[in-house]
Image (cartoon, rainbow, N blue to C red; front, side, top):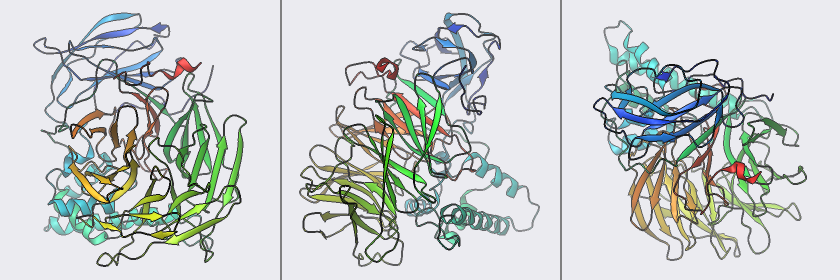
Length: 587
């Protein structure tokens, strides 16, 4: 018997659980159909089963119905705790009863859903909240750790609505101002815990800088019980089919896991816990979990993960300016402590990578990084340990804010790095040979919020615009914008973009929309891949080079905020990589 997460039996969010036999322990093969009240097939519905402790592998497995409404789980399941159907517009009519034997003829009948509050993403409540500029400022400044308005936020709005007062508007303003102060306190506590003098200071990204403006926005738009909503639509076609499979692995808490990658050498999913020095490793076949400590003194807070071409792992820190490298072949670590020229700690965020989404060095073997703490870029020479930072110049007309130099990619000639400045709506480049900045590019909105970047084979850079809910396409050779596209839901807070070198598409994980978008540069169209639960705060998506599986995680921070802590493996079911995307095949 092996051990899994103690959170395994937490209820799936957002749909009616269907009762199954508690004594069902034998391996079961499960399939069936989902139909409406008049017998018509429901296409694209998600069917999720939560496994019991008797099952090796993922904690939750989700599949989708095809054109005939049929679904089938790709593997036999040993021990089923619950089965659910999830759809924006329909809900199960009634439980299906006990399931203690193989079945391929389940029929699940659904009825129209009148209230989407249990399945709609947080972004649904922002659809009519304020004008575009107001919403962009709110998203960029407020949604960095968890979704807003998440269920607990909506419950708080209901409590405010229940206050008996002559002036409800005053009560709302004061109540939301208190929440903003509390959020900044939590941010200061979490991200200041590694401060040398022990004095907590808000982090450069995760505090609410415009607290009054944010509180006013919520007081104006988060009104009443906020327990009902209808009419929400994904806004683009679903890209799922009967071969799409989502596997979720819960990570033992408490934690604040951030990003995740799959290392084929060990057949393990690796996730960084920014609230500790831990790296979690999850065996995809058995579900067994272990953790390793980054071997560095003090708080590191492993943050961003980057695969190397040899399937080793590079890790950037929240604290202590320590870059780490882990080799799974012999389980060895190497770390580099870096400081800026003036001796200040370096806030390393991203490392340089290219179209393959793998670590990329310049021609001198130097790894380049974004320095979010000092608004600069810099390099680490892993051979010598030398590090050097270059502060970015001010952008006239966009001063007075924390610019927060954030995302980073490298061009194919290894001669330039491109970066984003989250706080001021700017992207720019740095000549690594001349060691100087080029002219920055100002985006139309100062609150556009460019976060994580990606770059394709032709050096077209894509930037997820967190605030405005858009995708930027920029030709780094001609230094011209070649596209700016509204996402299907502009309140979904796109956190990153990842180029898929085989499918030739861009994958866009969202923080506030419970979906991953796929953008096709040829047709200029979006598709939607829905996720199995609310609170699906995503930050990065990695792509397994062998199978084309999408690897990501629910990355709600800090460790005691609400939200799932899970690592995901997603097979889109398109067969683009020419082989089934089943990691167990590597065994």
